[in-house]
Amino acid sequence: MDGNYLVGKCLVAMPGLDDERFEKSVVYLCAHSQNGAMGFIVNRQIKEFYFSDLVSQFNIGNIAPVAPLILHKGGPLEQIRGFVLHSLDYKKEGTIEIDNKFAVSSSIAVLNDIAFGKGPIFNLIALGYSSWDSQQLENEIINNYWLVSEATPELLFKTPDDDKWQRAIDEFKFDVNEICPKTGRA
Image (cartoon, rainbow, N blue to C red; front, side, top):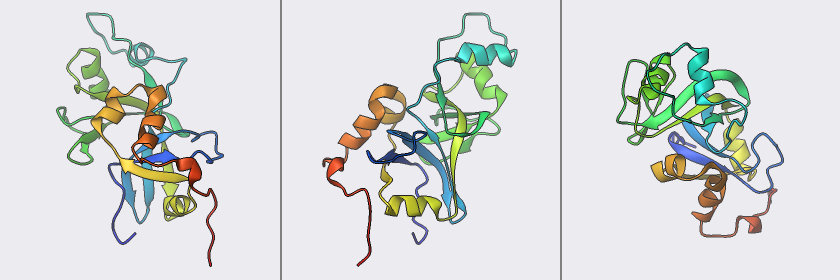
């Protein structure tokens, strides 16, 4: 890939991807280098656990009821570890700016600020993450498991989770079902 890494891009699962953990998923990549990649699935909600549960678990006090924010399954790894993907209007110690649109924070402070209404304007809270070893992601892209798309605030923060995959697919302006799921060499 000659240094053209995919930091700040989205991976869009191809229709033929037969790994149920990533079926019809959209993954935001916050890290990608010759050593591997890391990102968060941004369109899978956790149905049995909510932000209010997270706030009470960490004993974050607040004076008003906590907004009913949805938590996301960021990936199959370390599902008890939390990350907040957010807009750049919020920066505190421990915030990592990914590009000129997004940042990631993983401290209790960001959860506290969100609970008190002082957090980032746009945010997506993910428990767990997705990770690839060196050259693993590149091989999966070559083998047509993933398409790569631009990450936009509209897609990540404003599109309903159930619509994110289709919206990302529609951005390609071609029928992805026409792409052969297997590659070959001549």
